[in-house]
Length: 125
Image (tube, rainbow, N blue to C red; front, side, top):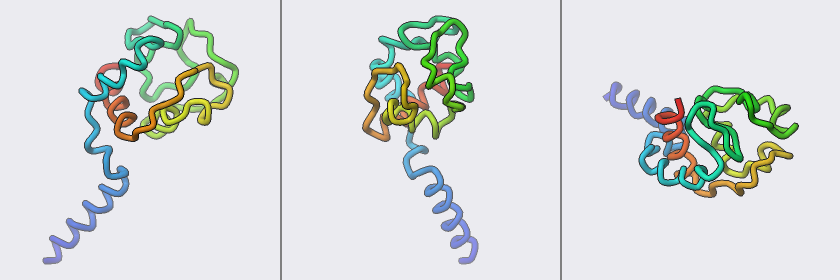
């Protein structure tokens, strides 16, 4: 009985810490959502488009892709791209980094953002 209670508490803490849905992120769905990003971003190393290449974006500092001309705001953002910062940025880029050049309005659905981040983790390394 005690072990079951401890297990329940631990699972509740883990589930709560992930926001409840991060465990359900789906990279295959993220690939479909990423189609919105493809017009401006590549996953290929060194291939910048209107936006910088997203190859290696996970754990990279904002404004660090060589050969891409970032806004002053992005260069000064002091952000390292992890799950939390990507989620916040993808929610509404212009609110997260005021002065960013990115014109994309953001992804309103949390599941879409989580799926895109899962896709990036699998395909942008």
